[in-house]
Length: 263
Ligand SMILES: Nc1nc2c(ncn2[C@@H]2O[C@H](COP(=O)(O)OP(=O)(O)OP(=O)(O)O)[C@@H](O)[C@H]2O)c(=O)[nH]1
Ligand SMILES: [Mg+2]
Image: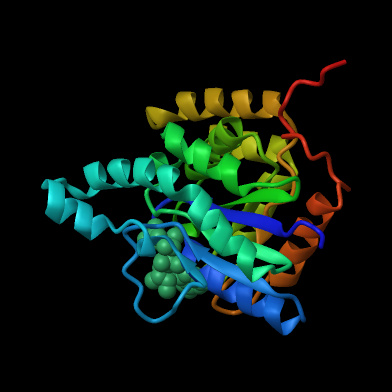
């Protein structure tokens, strides 16, 4: 059997990761594909759905807090290390289900996920040749030029850490008016429009910084294809599926787009 396509969902707290995983999982099943939905968040409190593989069977944030008197963030750090120790059991549970797709919901606190060495070990263990990281842009941040640039930087940081192909998604587009969506689309398609928006912003102290950050991003490569999605309304799920397929089929370079070429 062909190796499954594995997609990790990352993004700032509350960006819509869990909702997207569920909606996309349903979309895939409806379209006739099997999907395994994996919860990698040991602190997830969702009671209204059952992931197919749930890290809480192995590691629970609440237990760590109770047992060791840790705060929520200390417990997340400890949890990431414990998950890394259990990761081959988790991998086996995923593999036993033998599905076409594996959708992985990651912990809400992106810095805990993105910056821990143990997360790198977790992602390395679960990823095959057909893997992709989806990074969700929360519209609450993405609608301002400086917020948009900050999210691009964060997405680039995740790519730099994990060295996997990335797909950037704008989530919850149902909450933004069409003019704002058009503006965000223009920023992602045309770097010069983003640059203009950043510099046109009121001359607040962060403008200089945003401009410098933007230049750094521009130097890394093209800011291509921010997909507009709404898990609530089902918008963009098919387009995201095609984006995944393109990466899995090797249609796009499987190396991180920002990696320097070796020749
Ligand atoms: N309008 C709208 N709201 C959404 C959509 N997707 C998620 N939300 C809402 O956004 C909030 C956060 O969604 P989650 O899916 O829990 O986000 P998350 O990134 O998993 O959050 P954490 O794991 O806590 O970081 C919830 O109130 C969701 O109902 C969407 O497509 N449209
Ligand atoms: Mg979540």
